[in-house]
Amino acid sequence: MRLVGTTKSTISAIRDRTHWNAAALAPMDPVTLGLATQTDLDFEVNRANKEKPAPVDTGATLLPAAETTARKEAEVAAAAAEAENKPGGSDLNVSAVFAKLKQLGGKSEKEEE
Image (cartoon, rainbow, N blue to C red; front, side):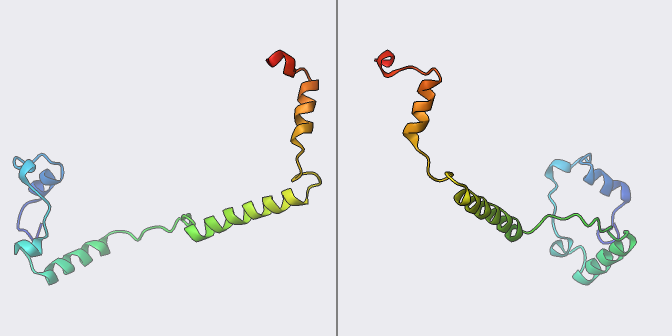
């Protein structure tokens, strides 16, 4: 407000998009427009930041991608190693499985033709 020399009501109307010329307004840097100097802008920004309370550290953050993908790769490697160590886990006899299914009541080869 001090930098551009206008009232609080005008600034709030622009923010709320209720200003009479809101459709034609576009956000621009006040230094580029020549409304203020960079030092004045920096001073006002620092002043506004001092009035705000410091953000509270919640402690909950996202984990880095390197950590989450490393966990996934370790879990996949552990599962693969476990599957290899199981007796009969990697040696699957397909014909024995189909023979067992036929015994359980599946269609015989003569019925399929």
